[in-house]
Length: 176
Image (cartoon, rainbow, N blue to C red):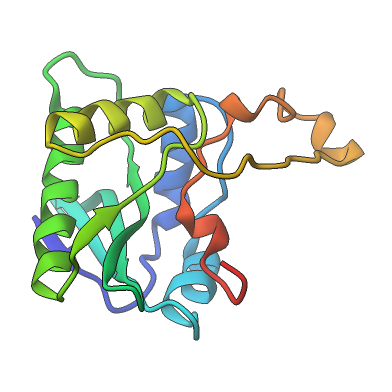
């Protein structure tokens, strides 16, 4: 079941932890408080939040917004679950991207943009699925600068950008 959420899901942090367990690397912890602040209380960007559920359990989500330029933007895409061989993760990514594309078009979007910043395994999978749906992968844009603090270096290999799953969610604020 895919449905719109009007408030941050209480199990967003659980899904995020499953995501890191499943895909490795690092990403922003999208727990309830973070999603409430960054998505639902964001005064600059009003995103539509669509959650994917199986047997009442959150399996993933897509967030998208319509920009002032009439362009639709995929703000965040998250899918987590056990490693599988039947293509269910790929299928859920396709379903969520299709849902966001159709809904953004119905809101007046003249096109849909997302981004691929790193070679994180999930980012590469999303890019592959999006390309199979007709999206183009344009290799342009500004590089990202990452400065891990001393505390951050005590954890995983955080200074390699390809260990991060980065989405537009990182920039959806006043300057984003």
